Amino acid sequence: MARIFISYLLLLISVLSEVYSATCPDGFEGSLSDPDKCYLFVSIPKNWFDANQYCTTNANNLVSIHSRGENLNVLATVTASATIDRCDSKNFWIGGNDLTGKGTLTWTDGQRWDYNNFNATQGQPHYQINGCVSSQITRPVSSSCWKIESANNLNCFVCEYYISSGTLTTTPTPTTTPITSCATGWTNSISNSNKSFCLVTTKATWFNALLYCQNIAAQGTLATISNAFDQSQLNSIVFEHQAPCFDNWIGANDINQLGTFQWSDGQPLVYTNWAPGQPDLNNRCTAAQLQTNGQWTTEPCGVDNCFVCQKYTA
Ligand SMILES: *[C@@H]1O[C@H](CO)[C@@H](O)[C@H](O)[C@H]1NC(C)=O
Ligand SMILES: *[C@@H]1O[C@H](CO)[C@@H](O)[C@H](O)[C@H]1NC(C)=O
Picture 1 (spheres, rainbow, N blue to C red):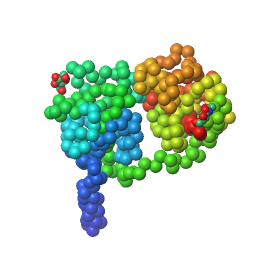
Picture 2 (cartoon, helix red, strand yellow):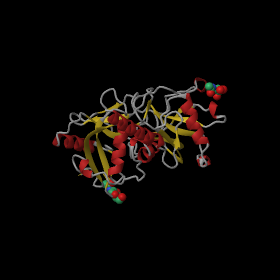
Picture 3 (cartoon, rainbow, N blue to C red):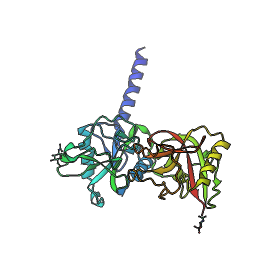
Picture 4 (tube, rainbow, N blue to C red):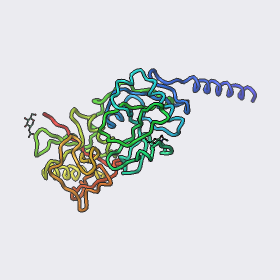
């Protein structure tokens, strides 16, 4: 009994020492508030979406911040960086955003929204225009506050990495996602011989759906419905494959400018097929009811829906 206990104790000690000897990968700074957490300051200005994609590819997520101490910790990491002068703006992106529903702030890593550093004197949080949270870099850093700004702005950013999450993926592999996971395969658009559609019957948030489409093909993006032919073709793809989702993400969104919808390939909306009462400007992403009349409704971008990708073949 005693021997079993002692060997158990030895095992426990070796496991514990392994935990405590775990360190952050090169280039990352250890968090003072969480021994498992590391920060990576990236001094490459990117829009919020590209910054988010960079973090999910090279770390875990854009950073989430849960206390005043952690906020100062992140600011110290940023201001200590030797490459901070590569960032033109005086703000850096963190993982906060209200893309999932106007006025409802969430972290991209799914952790609780339990702390914020908005300054009401600066009129923050100011939801009307944009969806993503940046932190100012002022000196002293104790007077740096957060604000909401256009996801389109170019800022440096901070990613987070949890040591216990396992190996770090350092090689982006955007082209290796098997196209077979696109349930229908690619179908040529009947209205534009350069364009193909593919229905994905796995549910994802609008933003993850967009990333998925971008990754399965060069010039891949969420579907642009350019005319009534595209619309009826998508309805028939869903019908033919008895696809499971009532709502399917398409590329239309007003993330860049409230009330001004555009396609995820940057085209303005010419043809539209809004359901009555739509678009509801409380939500910024658009789903088409492809099992029925195909009409479009806006939904919170964080909802999980099936989605339609497109690619240009020429
Ligand atoms: C809030 O912002 C105002 C105006 O910029 C500033 O004077 C004040 O110090 C800030 N408060 C905090 C707590 O940072
Ligand atoms: C297809 O792509 C080619 C080359 O980019 C372009 O010249 C042509 O106009 C496109 N056709 C359609 C129908 O968009």
